[in-house]
Length: 109
Length: 113
Image 1 (spheres, one colour):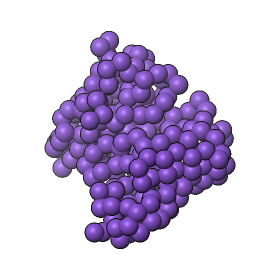
Image 2 (tube, chains in turn red, cyan; image 1 turned 180 degrees about the vertical axis):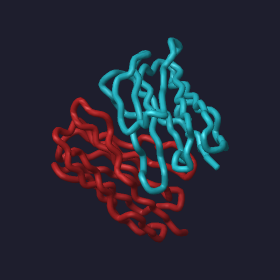
Image 3 (tube, helix red, strand yellow; image 1 turned 60 degrees about the vertical axis):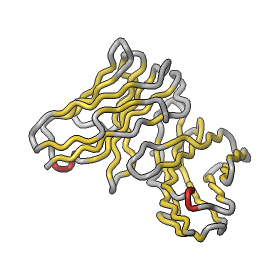
């Protein structure tokens, strides 16, 4: 069964304190791994797609990396506006997306 | 703004009732997905339509049904509502059959009292 787990469940950082979020997955065949950001009361917003091990994508203070078993979302020098829930999702070949439970990130000023 | 429109934003109803949630996908997107999000279960895939036809089913209850109309908007019908159906219901759209990244609407918050 395709599964996605994310850790930690919640993370509190001081502004400027860099850290990483983890997404571990088991999937029969990975077509793509996706990162989304979700603000309270809103729909998830697409951040990155990664397709193969070793691939990296960057956007502002965020960088996503992918290995054969997990993905990391690195947050460098975060700001309070980076506070959100970050969702990881995998797309197996021929299947629909499977979302992880998310990591709730709080960045304190 | 994702370009996906969902109405209504909030819905309060009683157990046993029936409601309809509506979704208009991004212009040009042929695929529409419905997801349910509750505090204890995360985002759960319900159903996908592609250009008017059902493409995939997830954890959708028999009391729930959906359809996609010729103008590509979609409706999710929830009937015989139970307290446990209270959740955020999201619609998402994507551009093609290969299921590229999803664009989500702002959701409908359903409260069953």
